[in-house]
View (cartoon, rainbow, N blue to C red):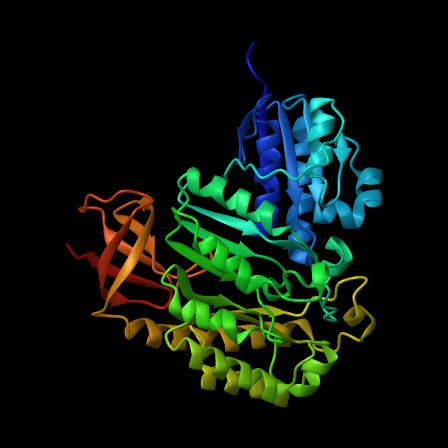
Length: 430
């Protein structure tokens, strides 16, 4: 009997991607699974994002698009899960009747049970059907967040911080290594808080050490930390263990003390500067990725110029800039949004221009150096790869002529020959 087709469309962050991959593993014995925008599948599951306004709009538009296909009989079943559904389930149910079921977050087992017409399983699913290229994968080590940043809706959607037990993570990681994963990317809302809910202590260093012992991984990358309580021991481990990429993704959000206070970040200007300098002292060649919010209520021109100077002084290798978006239910939603939208956009553009010039200068310093590069794909006239300083989908890429005979998912030594704002070009070194 031919298995029906099932397409899982994942929107938003890499944490959603991991949930979708776990769900696919639970269903693959009954369905032919795809992770794409295929509009001809028998069943479609949309894993939504509800973090900020733009993401919510994308999720709603996607649901409406597939609801129309469901109405036309081009797909037989349509299910919606994830953050948007968690946050606005009643409103969605009222407005969109073509959806066969709405589910919130942490509903992977429930969705699978309903599709399989079985009782939900209670045990942790360590298996994954990857939606990424087979040589890299994300490992979600915890769910939710105990921080209460004024602008962030994550605790409202995902709840408090809950660590995945270490034995489960190690089992999952070993399975990924057996599938051929070479780069393991650790993700959480706050990596360094891992374990606090279990015994009041951070166990992130212990976890990373254990993951380094697994055969198969050549790179382990750390995403999403928090400046308060970041352990020096983790930085020392990063410097000393060749498996751990000299890379960190840690949103700082601002530098003005009074804005940081209003954001409820728990740190001030001096602490933030001290943290960045300490990271670079422990790992001098680290690629520091961060993000900033401009236009937060009460942000003056002086505050913004202070942020611009901070970015110039710190010279971050990677940075993203977002305009403040008031999210219902957050503390900042109750504050008057007093920075006009056009001013927010001007500030985004100015800060990004500063960062682009810094990125160009830093990339220029790579010219002539030889770096270990992981080949992600072949695209047109170039193989596209990344160094340890670049995470997939969000960071710089290294372009190598397709005249070379390279293998996707393999490492090679590449000499950087040319640099641009966001990409470099290189030649393979034999």
